[in-house]
Image (cartoon, rainbow, N blue to C red; front, side):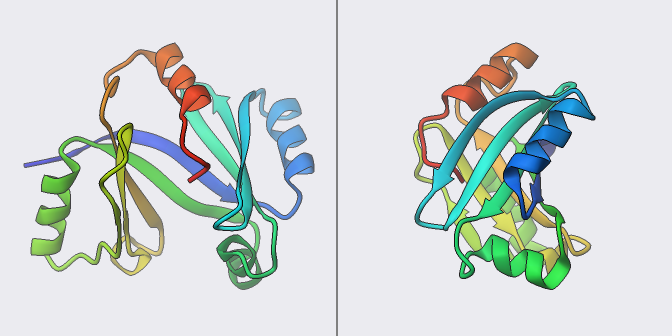
Length: 155
């Protein structure tokens, strides 16, 4: 049986990325890692290390963005939680065999495979399944460097 190994990241939707970033650093002691735009999905994301964890802040760059729609419907706050899994294909198969909806699958990336579990099947939380192809068991600093050096556009 495949399993969830750990939380990969926690993603928070915000209206003002600059103000939220300052709060992350000044109030909570987070270490800024990087910022990336995602022009296709119309948002920008900032990555932070907070303790042994990665937090991301997502700001819409268009009123049509799924982030803007999320904030309009639910307000600022938790957007999704990324969880690292081993054998993502096996994990997806097990979930779907149990009737869990996994509507989004991106299994062709050379660095990491990912999929999304419907919030209807995860207590109202969007779960992003992540399977890093190399360095999954890396120590903290290597995992943070992986975030900093991840080549793909924000996602």
